[in-house]
Image (cartoon, rainbow, N blue to C red; front, side, top):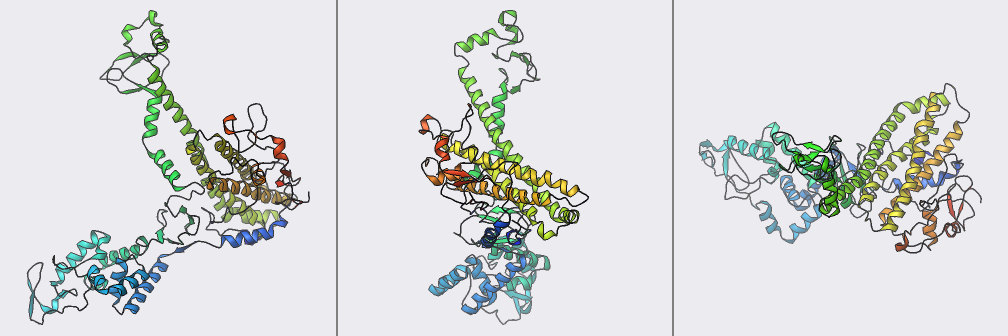
Length: 590
């Protein structure tokens, strides 16, 4: 964990690389007071992990990089096809900046390509006369004051500038500009724009041209972070869609939402839509209000009395329970805090449908609130962790180095821990969106998912507390503390164990919880059991096997059967396969 090769680049604050969760180790379990004595044995794994993380399936492009690539593509097409650079630019723009496609189409049928993009094979020269008439303003001008595209249709400089300026102000469509003559389809290239347009319009045109190189290319996209001007070139079909820009923003290449691995894009889209839609407002209104019997406006009851008065101009007085006129109520109907009429009608079934709809809306709202609150809480915790990571990098690491007489190169395990916390908070946040859409009737999957999620969350909380609160003791110390190396071992161990928890969680969700039902598989047993709790506890306090649920889900597996698959390490509490002689986590002898 102390290895410098195991550290992320400082820019990897928002999202770790695609192979962050690529390990094959089994899920472990640890105690808050456990000893973690395996830091020095982790060097090889750290180097392997660092090597994998360098194998990015995307490239970050700055504006200078984009311009360079664009110029190279234009030069390549111009050289191969022996055409002017302005014509090469028009061709590339038409074929979405694909050099290979330009070559294929051109050599397959040059005539059709020229006709489609407006490139004439032989330019028409302006007539050699003293004066020419502008085709827009119909004024006569000397021939040297007139300009035309390759088609020979002449227009004065003022009309050309007005035509070009209007087209550029209308948006990126100016990149496909044609001759002003309605009957002509000759293209107006970048060379004419540079000659005729004013400085402001030329700058806009070049900006549109630069952006089109990214937006029209299916392999490149702009980083969606506000104010970011970096673009990303992605190797399509290379695996994970998670991308981390140089601005530190992590996003999904496929849907351009923030990075959400291991949850798929469809689930994320549904969750974001639900968070922003009016459906939950309507659910709240339905669950917590009733319509006025007279004007039908929804009313929320905010006092104890059942006597409700609608707001002006309605002012209708009615009973909250039965919605009947209050004038018909009194001692014979139960008084102010009860309504015998309502109770009698309810027993007869008169209110069954409305009550059922209200109860359903209330349950739906409560369920959504449960998942949303935890989703939002982990999001805010992640933002706080990012802030703490910045503070640690810029201020506290140097202070800790001075207080504990340790070189900063030996304190990188702290940054590794904070990077792990940031990434795990992101994963944990999206698991709540996953859980919300997990079908209620799939009891075994839900039980398995909640177990993995709970184990990962408890491991993360231990790591976060250690990095946030226990570290503060060493930051506040005036002199070096003797037990700092013990703290180093503990924090590095918690980082490693927490990573393993989340590796298993991510792997399970990405495979659709397919391990459920494979209760006889030793691999499943190794992945989903811990040394102290082999399954979610039932109300009686007994453990139940993972991958099974209630009677309808099949026979449950006992804890004794699960224990046969594993042995727990005395040092790190990691759950190892029975056949292993040394701990797969810390290499401690059995």
